[in-house]
Image (cartoon, rainbow, N blue to C red; front, top):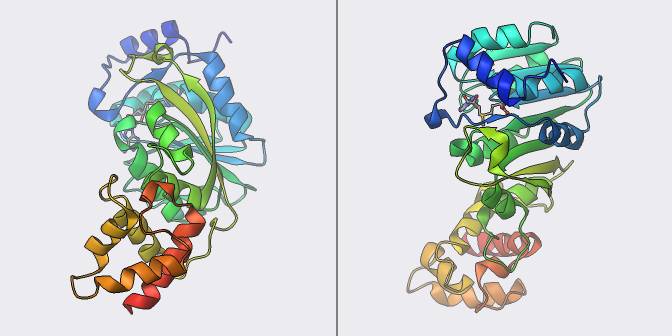
Length: 291
Ligand code: SAM
């Protein structure tokens, strides 16, 4: 792998040559380990008919491997200083395009229309900047982009929350939001030694296989997520207390217990024990009652 960007020496040389110091504020922890890159690429199941959207190419370590595996690669990078360097490292890959911008502000529907017309499926593959992991994932999911997979390196704790099943401390509104749209699977846990500079936390590669249809059918998605949010407002309180505080008054509160019972949910349960299916039934009943 002599030409690989992802090595400690090549990374150091490139940064030095371009006079760059890394910005902690932009989550710039670059991957220097070829094996981990291989695991990320493997999990994305790319081939030459497919497209890959990368968020934050950095100096191009992952972008280069994506360019080898996919038919078309688009990488969105916020840090303008990296663009000349990326032009140099990715010059040999004409089907890899770098776009300067903040992924949270980029019009992704338009980006897809412009760049991914000819490809069969698109995956998002990235080593995400940790300070904006959740907003980025939620943007990708809520915009309902035609994605096959989201394969991302993120903070280990966040990956565990995304993949958590009901009943434990990791299960919460993030688990439900992610699992509403996707089937999550933690691919591998990654030690902090594979980055320069090394972050203070361990990381994980997670694969979110995007579902054809959400896991449950709900009439009003916004209300469904509002009920979920409300149920976790105070984790130690019962579902009854959390929902009463959000949706009812002293006078109307007596309606809540029968609603919960009709949904098959014991009022003394806590939000963290309810499945997505139970939240779907509950939000339907609540919305009918509150109309
Ligand atoms: N892909 C490279 C790698 O694996 O070595 C770099 C990963 S580094 C963890 C995150 C990258 O995301 C940095 O290059 C950073 O400048 C970029 N970035 C941070 N915030 C961003 C945003 N809002 N939009 C696009 N890129 C962003």
